[in-house]
Length: 231
Image (cartoon, rainbow, N blue to C red):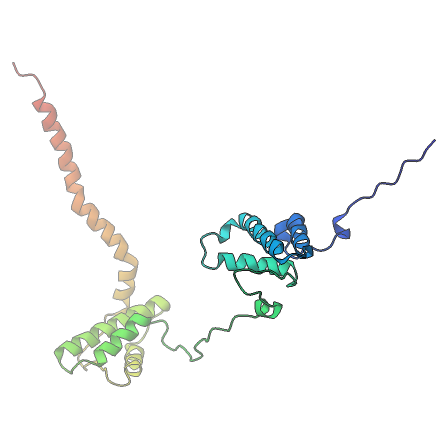
């Protein structure tokens, strides 16, 4: 009795590694075949055909500005930068593609008044540039109340008016100060406005349009009365 011939199994672990696994082993073999072609013109033609194939496998690149350049870079990477063809872009080096982007500089100065927001900072700068007078005083008082409101949004505990006035003076470099007789809105009023503001707006709408709904019902009754037959 004859013994069966041994079957040669092809395991992935025994195959050469895939440089870009997303393209699969067939594309990798196409690249290897292209590299083995001696004629440069034919080799370039095959390379362009491979670009079309991997372009279909990469639909997310369509429409992007550097789509074609990225595909050619992938082709050179799969050839381990050994492919020599007349491509539309110069062949990159491994070092060029491995370079890391420069770090974006980040301001290191401490943000002391972030809870007031950029809008308040711009308002203070504009107010400080105004000529002294009643208009500037009114604007300063408005900004101080806004600062207190922003502070309470950030920290809902009570805040002394002295803290607000001190921050206002520092942020304006000593140019903005409230008059002695000026008083800021109370903490209780500001917190109450934050809690009840949206609810009051809804109630106002109900009051404004509620009566119109009742009037509509009466209109329907009059309409039905008009349709009654008269004898």
